[in-house]
Length: 93
Image 1: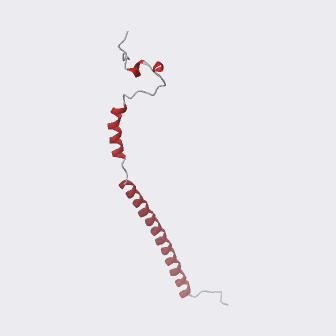
Image 2: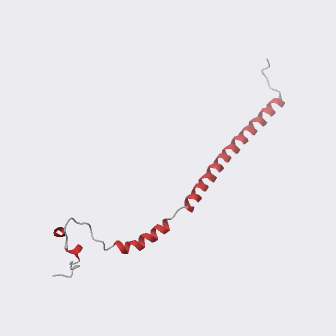
Image 3: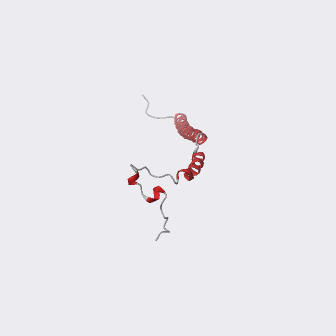
């Protein structure tokens, strides 16, 4: 069994380790690229199905309609003046 390396074997070992390091670097970059493409795809699909602007438009339109809806009450004897429409809106003395 030999315990020494020839200069050719030593150079071959250095080239092999350099190729392994380069392969590891390429594998890491490919993995990062795949994750980035996957995240971008998910965001694009989410943006495609996002209807937040339409919901906000509906909310603005419906806000005026439900602004003056009375609160639910049990009976006519429990109704307050503002719900019945007899409120003075701060103008009464």
